[in-house]
Image (cartoon, rainbow, N blue to C red; front, side):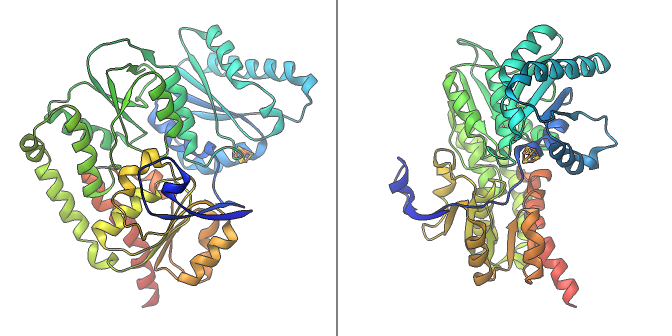
Length: 429
Ligand code: SF4
């Protein structure tokens, strides 16, 4: 376990940002990438997620996704029991048999993700090869892709990154073609529709979303594709897009009024939309959002906040809470500080902000308890112990399950942070 304090400009080849960053590599408390199936299976409506894993994985995915039990299930676990290398041929046969049974029972499945996990018997299996083999066999009815959700390699939002990176590898490459905008990151359908309307009103017609709502909406990507990330944790996806020549539009993320405005503005600039048209299109939704956010300012202003590293949404959320709601930032922890993606966010934060990357949970708990923040954002595993110490907590995973992006959700995003403070106040009466 180690702690390193350095400045961003020393540590990575980026513009001169004078933040001091605490970097730690110790015990960490986060869910694994399998968790992202909970929101991805709702988004891509004819996809199926087959976790290749152990009974532990099956328990996680069933209990995390148990709330969706009334929906037609679109995830399952193929459990691989302990086996040695000599048994791998059998494991591949077993996997093929599971996929055969699944696809013959469920002809509605158009896209199948094989999701890797931690057990050594799964690591020994080459799921990329298995996905290619199965894709060939079920072509053209079903596309079979793979990614890893293993807790050894991923935090919970990286599951989405792996899934979208696999979709980018599977995208239809176009050499030239019409200029298009690709919005990248799973958003609630209602948020996606709002953004679509706002882009269209400014004359940006050719818009694709990744992931699409169905397997048929395979994006067409090439050098004339400009992509705008809607989530900050999509590094591998961004690398994949860069590799096939798509161009990234740098912007803060669409959380809060300011983030949403700058995110939309960045795309508008690439399309040469004049400022007057831009202002006219956003005027109404922006002023509604400002009003909605301002309702929570009296509750949140001057309430200090501490972020444990978990969802990777921490930096954009901290920027929103500091700049639009006046909350002092005690520490902003994030599993990874991808400066290439977070640069425009960091530019909006004061260099005095204490950032931390990675985790050594005991040391971070000590810092948090010493600071006694008014609200602490953390994973489920830390919430109970911190509440027992008298701190007010917010589960970071809720921020992934709730639509918080865009103008119409800016007030809801603020409300999510006000709620635990209101509850505490009620309990105290
Ligand atoms: S951490 Fe590993 S073993 Fe545990 S549920 Fe996640 S993928 Fe499965």
